Amino acid sequence: MIPRRCVPTWSQDTIARRFALTIMAAVTVAAILSALVVSLAGAWLATPANDAGLVQVVASVTHAIEAAPPPLRPSLATAASARLYSIEWHPADDPIAALLRQESSLGDFHPLEGGWQSLFQATGTDPAAALLWHDLSSGSHAQFPARFPDKFLAVRLKDDSWLIYLPLGRSREAIRAFRIGIALILLLLSAAAVSLIAARQLSRPIERIADAARHFGTNPKAPPIAESGPRELRGVIRAFNAMQGQIQKFVGYRTAMLAAISHDLRTPLTRMRLRGEFVEDADQQARLFRDVDEMQAMVDGALAFFRDDADEEAVTAFDLGGLLTTIADEYADQGVAVAYGGPSHAVYRGRPFALKRAVTNLIENAVKHATPPAVTLEQLPGTVAIVVRDDGPGIPEDALEQVFSPFFRLDRSRNRVSGGVGLGLTAALAIVRGHGGDIVLSNRSPGGLEARVTLPTG
Image (spheres, rainbow, N blue to C red):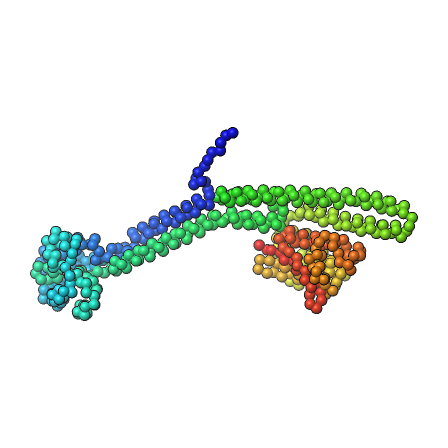
């Protein structure tokens, strides 16, 4: 025996693998979008001015401006300003310089520490002269111009003038929160987009199975479903196709067997009629012939029922409103007034001749046992309803379901000429359920019967 080759699960097209690939694709797309946003957003996502990465730039600019003559310092400060911060130079006799000297003496400014000190020492700037405002609640802060933020860098030069670095961007916390928010939004958007595409690819085979199940209910000869999708769904499709094939074979065998039995019953019925000719008692002979005729009618009805079941017509789109109008016109030609109410045109997909026979059986039942009915067509969301109403005596409540049983007849309809063999409602119910619908009988108030045929349109 040749051993089966084991295929790793991860290498097969499974639902688990598709979910994993969906998550990976969503994360990858989010990372790419985040990188693009960061690279294209410019100052919106740039590092804030008070970040430690700008220490060397600040120290270099301070050293360069201090080496320049005082008349050139304002223009150099303006030229050195960047998109993240602006630079202002204030001479020793400037009011802002005096205010800075006053604040530094009060201790509201604190010397820079750590990497800032080492970088200022490397550029030859006195680190003790570089001060950073920390006291946000100081009342003296109101003396500074409105353009000054709560946190800025002030550097005292050797000639007692001051360089002030005013951040233009947002704080580090705000930018960090903005970065996180952008990343989360991009992750959600990419996950939603990738998930929708993946879910659509995954749901298509499931939708095909659902459609096939619906169509199989209305068309037992529907073709099998093409296998597609992940491994689990392909297995479901194979099982459904196998079940559909078995049901089709079973229905075919059952119909053929019952039709054969009904056909074979004709031979003994013919012999019984021939032997009845030799019965001398006329009364017994009449009873025997009546029973034979009734059995013959039942066999003919059964054969017609099974023949229609075996010879399924094709499902097609037709005008249901026009079909009901035609039935009413045919009864009018026979002198029976059947009123029709509803739209004159209503497209429906099904088997028109079978539905015509089902509605005709319902109307015929009302014509024989009650009054000529009124037929109404109602179009509802997802369904269409054919309602047959009469003004007759109705049916006992305990028999509303039983009348659909084969060969069942109420006592008042046991006459074979007027009552039939009891297969009309059975055939009508089989046809309607073959379309995925149902028939519900109910007694009307104050009198009459209503037969509501509900058919799905989806």
